[in-house]
Length: 433
Ligand SMILES: Nc1ncnc2c1ncn2[C@@H]1O[C@H](COP(=O)(O)OP(=O)(O)OP(=O)(O)O)[C@@H](O)[C@H]1O
Ligand SMILES: [Mg+2]
Image (cartoon, rainbow, N blue to C red; front, side, top):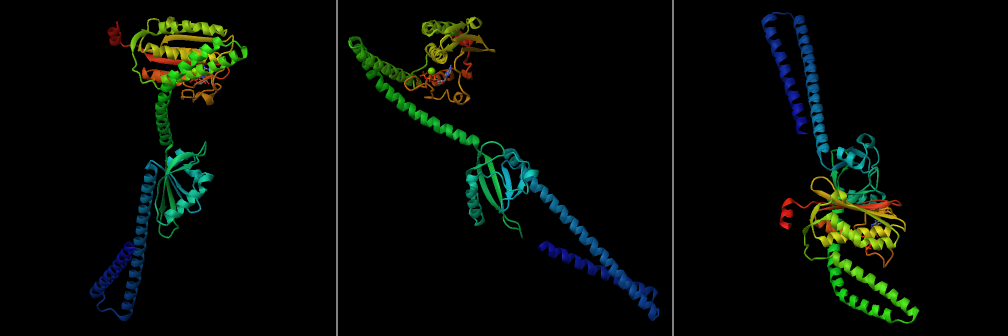
């Protein structure tokens, strides 16, 4: 407003100065050359003065107004560029829309997050609010219009492709003179944060569950052993065939309970790890040798090849590595049918790394199950058959030894579990020898 006043004041003052200058010039001209001029000459002189000053004034005003206008346009263009630059440089997705949810602005991060290009979406109805969140958005709009802030709210937005995603949203009123209020929605992708939070909750849950399980398993271990002993005696003494079959079922159930309790104790084990250098290939061969009769009883072939890794030492707790091998071999055995095949082997991979694997041509694992197999208590086996702790224990052990465990599977064709461990360092070798 003040600028407008200045504009008119400058124009008026400069016009008065121009008129004064023209009149003064004419006055000098008249005094010098037309002192004795007649009435008609003077009449024409005044007429020319009037026309000349009007023309000069008109040209001056037109030039002044035009220059001012160009200046304003340039200022406007620069401020638009600045505002666009700010909008694009902003790390979050910024969307400007009116009360009818018609999009007016859409920055590059919004293009990236939601998958709609600015050119196609401006002027269209906002397509990213899921049906379930329409009411919520209307409520937010009412809140910001009445001056209440809507900041850092967790909600959902629907990108062009895929499921709705979790975002953190702030909604601000965008007021400009003489236009209805617009809404500036700023969102950022918080999927990773939500995932980590869920993971933290899961870890907390598992930790407290682990503590509870460890206590329970500890208390159940001795009574279960005593019960098993009694049931075994009962089976041996049972004369009646029906009773004997019942006792055998009881014994099976108790055996499973004991296995479960032992697994729980292994899973929540707090005992110190006793690491020593040992030959991984030799460990694999001895576990395979122990397991071979069980495998052969099911008419399954077991092939072990450790030639590539002979002499490769790992610095590890041998009992734990043996436990992992047993877990993998028994999983493979559960997966194959009679006549199937299990292969186990050992090889060196890259400098300082050694790998062993157990692979089978059994039922395989579906993609939906594959992402859960390392979770504690995840099992596809019927109740009383699997604890779902085998792979969870295996992963704990391998991570504890600085290694990695990977599982690849083709449903219907088979599964391969590979474990990579660091080779024992020279220093550790000397210390052990
Ligand atoms: N070699 C394999 N072939 C097919 N499925 C497998 C294989 N190894 C693991 N799985 C799947 O992963 C699940 C989890 O295995 P995990 O060893 O942790 O528990 P479990 O075998 O079910 O129980 P437990 O180890 O107590 O017998 C299994 O129930 C099975 O569905
Ligand atoms: Mg298992």
